[in-house]
Image 1 (cartoon, rainbow, N blue to C red):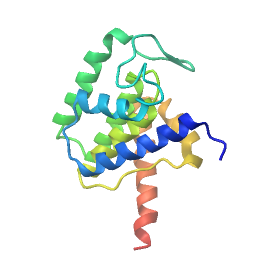
Image 2: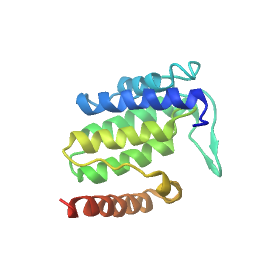
Image 3: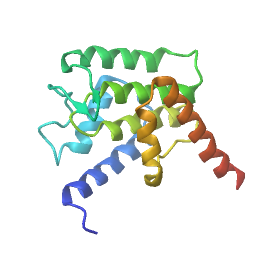
Image 4: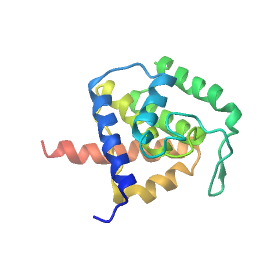
Length: 170
């Protein structure tokens, strides 16, 4: 009830992007990711919306990669997502999400875009999505601070626990 108008607008915009993501099976591209960001933040943070950051960012003890390396790193991530057919798609979604969060390409909204990316991969591969419940956010953030294998382990355990519970009732 007492949420700032900006938060409400971003949530509404995120819902529209999410629904569009469900309907359209676009190929993951730089343009798609930038458009997601622009559509979510265009009304509330027009100075950063749809643009990779051009400054250094520190998240707690973590120093995100230099902004000058972002384009190259994002291109490598997109290649990894679109061309890696050797790993399970749930694992691919987890790895893509982890790598995206470590690249931290935006000034704000990296978590939302990273989770969209993760769920895009799952949904369009025929797998159920993973919604990180608000009450589980602490363990999710803690897992993101681990190395890649630690996060993958967390993600797969969480994914199986959520979907085992959900499908046990059907």
